[in-house]
Length: 336
Ligand code: NAD
Ligand code: TDX
Image 1 (cartoon, protein in one colour):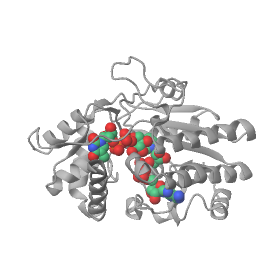
Image 2: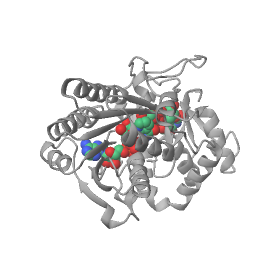
Image 3: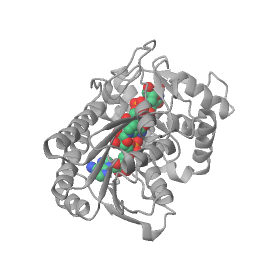
């Protein structure tokens, strides 16, 4: 691995992965990112110039993609439309980026016979009952619920077909909910932290009983690097860190860590089709590659994340107002 093309490297997980890659390998990194509302060039600040090239462009632009894939030996594909609530309001960009964009990358990787790693989500498996003793495994059937998760499922299936039909040297990973620095303020944890910093009451969907399986973004990065370096071609690996928590519990932790009363939030209308629970069995990754999450202390990770948002208001202030305006429009639609 000498020249790595990272798509979506200006987004939350992609940028954290690029920092991880530069710190832990000698590879040269080229980031391809469209800088949509979710991408931010500043998330790559501070990296040495001789290790990083940045190209602004669309993963569905086949001429550009062909050129960049030709110049790399490895492609790690993070770029996506990533937010469920946006996919309910306007699904089209999810088709264009997650499906057509992934297809465009796969064709280029096939033409140039490049190693390909596809980043995906546990949401492709649908959801679990709260009391289900089972967790998702690599063998769980696909059953996505939202426009977002269905386009991620479609992209996963394309990757598997390109492996089987064309011999593409690809691996896939499906990870649970990430948290940490540089996550867009539309997502649950940063939205509530920045609401509190702005004097806005946090918003909990439904009754807050839905469960997400939280993993620190640094652990996602180390798992992806392990798979890119040592994973078996054609295989899927689930990534998790035994971090199941209800949304109400996560919000209670945020309120406590930020010194607010435990009832200083509002219940709001539930998300349409809201998945109840995700839970990951990551034993394949542990048994095959010896990977373990290093940041399993959720309280410590959450406290550090709160500090990051406190210290980096410049990074998120520009997105906050538009994000809250979007959520107000969703609430107004529910009221009509
Ligand atoms: P994000 O929304 O923060 O970042 C996405 C990045 O992709 C942005 O920089 C954006 O500018 C870029 N992008 C979007 N459309 C593009 C296009 N057409 N061409 C080029 N670049 C484009 O998302 P994230 O949370 O960092 O998620 C990254 C990946 O990880 C996604 O594939 C997502 O499905 C997956 N994932 C996310 C989570 C999570 O908890 N956030 C969990 C599991 C998997
Ligand atoms: O204001 C909110 N209040 C609330 O209760 C928001 C924004 C969310 N929620 C709930 C919905 C979910 O149950 O919190 C939970 C987490 O919501 P999101 O941050 O929107 O994440 P989720 O829908 O679970 O999807 C995330 O994890 C899987 C990422 O956004 C996806 O990209 C990833 O694939």
